[in-house]
Length: 67
Image (tube, rainbow, N blue to C red):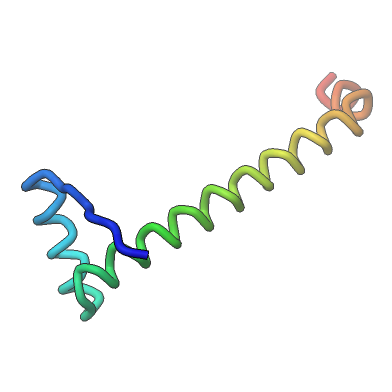
């Protein structure tokens, strides 16, 4: 699937720096950054959900420990 990515000059410079630092093309650097951001987001959402479940499950105990 082809896609055109429009970047500001600042974003273009950042992408160039990222690609150079990783030793890859700008296309590869952009693809990696997107994949890594998506993985972090999904992982962060899951951690928040597990934390919320734990707080709900142990709310009474946590309240007693806080006293």
